[in-house]
Length: 475
Image (cartoon, rainbow, N blue to C red; front, side):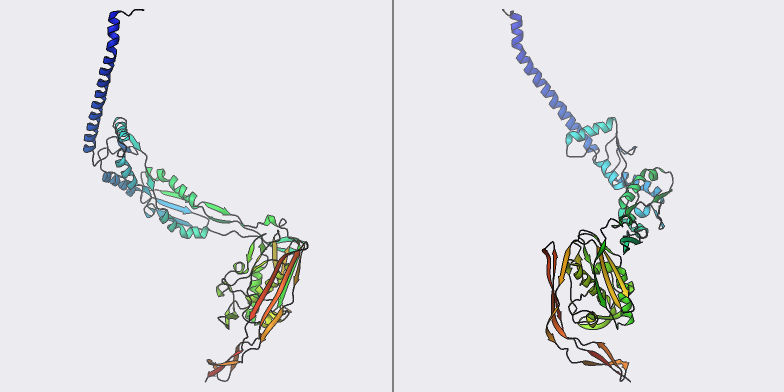
């Protein structure tokens, strides 16, 4: 088909028209860009040190204001609420604190910085967009608040400490073939600090919206601390029978020593040792001092026998050690005494002893029976005998303890007499007692289902010990 001449001429002009239109639009865009850029530069210059128009904070227009003016505005608002009282209550006590004491109120520093920083980022396009939005419709920044966590917790520390209570594990005794409770378990509690902070944050709007200072009451939230061993587990602990026992005599002990033995053994009575738990004698017994009820009796300290708090506690650790040996339990840590102590050989050969010196010297064992072990202690005051009994579930292990072997016995050094000006002249007082030195060892083998599961050796290196007498010189 033949194209008419006038259409042909028009089609030839289309490329030229397109080029003209392209360059026109390009020029217009560049012109607009330069105009906007120039206008933006002038706008920035005009508002160099103040907030851009249309920027609001919590409904208040701060356009044209300086950062300092915004800060002062909200600081003034904080002055109106600084006398607001916060009353924190608990079952333990009540504490009152003012908003001023914990810096509670508007975060004037953050709000002033946010208002001034709006549309002043490194992204030019975003800045221009925000400026237009603020100028046309306004941009309202939400309020920001603050308070000092540190000051709040510091003020509340006494009430938090009173509120806190550790959970109490249930203690059991073994009678007539079953476990019965003699101290029930008890939940503990502690302040829920995170929830407390959340409640504080929820009070911001209430406080700042009030026309005058008021009183805010907050019940301190608590977390319940559950005990490890609860009363309802009494029949599910695998405590069925006597595993083993250990005994020792403490005849001829002074009154204070007998008292300490009774006190320490009572504090271990009824304790449950969980499966796979490594039991620490020192940790279970806790502090051994006059502050925890112990009296002064003879102890070995710094190579001497002296009067010290808790003398006699090693009688308890020695008896416990013997029960552990007889039960065939893995003994993780044990230390022999520095010298042979007569009490421990009243009903036993040497070497079957264990000393403790909390917290550096301990007696530890692991419960590898797969069930709980119940510790029971008994004192026979008539014969002055201490007994430890361990209850649990027997797993078929058999224990063979070798007779202690005594070698390299060394006689004690000669007696020593020391003048003591505090004693009347002529009076003699013995403060240390002679003991033969020796190296002692014994072995133990524990088998189960015909296989050896424990094979250990216990060594004791007893030093020879001299008797020491004080000789009075006081006139």
